[in-house]
Image 1 (cartoon, rainbow, N blue to C red):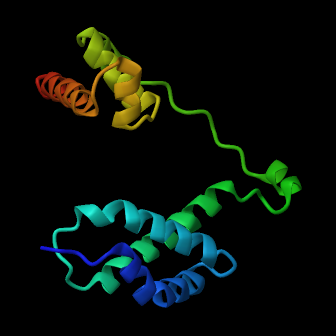
Image 2 (cartoon, rainbow, N blue to C red):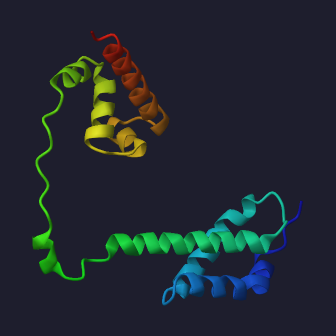
Image 3 (cartoon, rainbow, N blue to C red):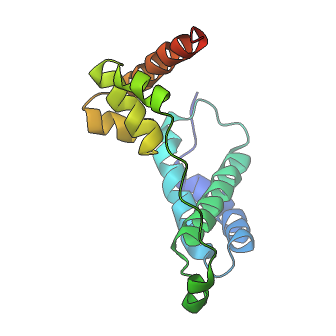
Length: 158
């Protein structure tokens, strides 16, 4: 299977990509289109077929626009900082279940660390793996084994 040169793809579809990028991200369409072309260029050698390349490009453009909106939402400061002082205060969290934490404390060290990082630290498996010096798959396994042990312990509880 032979793909056309990437430049041919750019020449043929640049207007469609630019039009969609500007429609989905007004004011930032050029940035979104550039990101889409960059991602398409990186993925192009791995394509296994040349069917509907226009649709493939527009899908990448759409995803780049959504990424742009998500990033903008994370970095947009609050419009009026004085309103933050009026924000409702939340009651303190309930005390942790002592029996559960005793069972967590009885887990093997690596499983206990993985569970605490995952659920108390609210880290994803990549971050847990980085903290434990292991792979994400191994961090999933440690958490899974720990949860299975805790479920069995709690099920056998009178």
